[in-house]
Figure 1 (cartoon, helix red, strand yellow):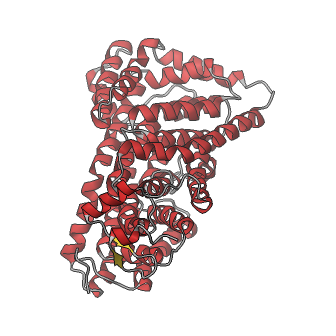
Figure 2: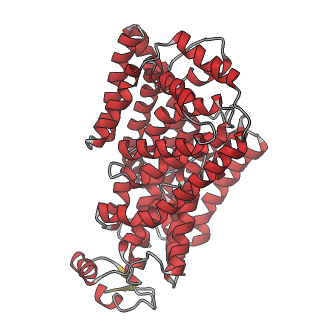
Figure 3: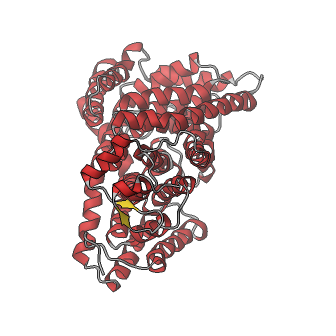
Length: 503
């Protein structure tokens, strides 16, 4: 039996089987082989899912179409990754990143650095509309400043990730911030306003923790100025440090504030960075082409500088781009074979209270992030699958759009094999694949990312900031012929009946 969109109807145990087997292979790679390279386990997961799909009557052509469809949805993300790689290499060559590190070490307070880093990344991410672009530019510079202050890389990364994804979540320029309301039929700015009750408290708590942590980690002891001096002297010896080299940052943020789309904005940043490298640093055009592709290379004799500034370029994004393509394909085959639908529908049909529904929606989006490795699929699939249940309980759909962002956008950087987590690891140079697994501690330290979903769940159970659908919204469901789940009989019902069915 198939649904109207030709997705097979399969049992819950059969739907869970390929996911469990994939995670067993992934666990073998991570914990037995002690190698963080999830590419091959996910490819094997595609094969396992496809084999079980064939047993359930799903044709290879249909599964291939499912994979290609989800990959096409993710192509803009791939474009942003390529531009982030280019902009990182070129901005290092232009002296932009070195200048940010230099001035940061000179001007920022070590004790307040973590909180300041989170705020700065939030502002830049709201302006750019992309957390990934923020990580590869300002985030990289902040990692260098944190290293100069002697802070562990995972603490700095946690603050950077909190700020970058906080900004991405509420920016009207962000693709995920536009996707969530589009999937659930909510106005964009209504969606953004409804995000504030969870987003603001979680960021406020994160900033308080980062402030306390800064004083605890550094305390009243003087920062090692020998380390800072070696970095600033090394930067000044190899780059022209000037306010003019910050022009690419200023112009990119200016374009973002003017609501230029993310990809043209980042491309313009590459061009301005190239011109800055030519004029300010005396670079050759040939070297800029090479740095945009292969990344920047330098030997200063100062290990900390070389570790920070050797990188960038399109090639640096190969690891994450291949992982993203594989993760998107895996998510596509799970969706087309009916595995994700079966699991989510089974969950939806067992939920009666609004608190349970909100918790389930956030959890489903987060779980899809873990299983399918893609924030876009987690938002789109959760929005589609849970819509009838929210309408059946008479809940405003902006509750669902917020839930998809909580479990989708904010959880993605916390899953190392997810597209978001892979970008964090690559763009911030955490070196996980090279054995620096301790830097995965950025995950619990990215407080704003995991606090917000928890606060959203609590609101659902307490009934706070959980609006009911008004007459206008219910009438819109009626006009659009939206599917509504009868919360008593668990069958499709008319919107007019569902309006009075919530307990």
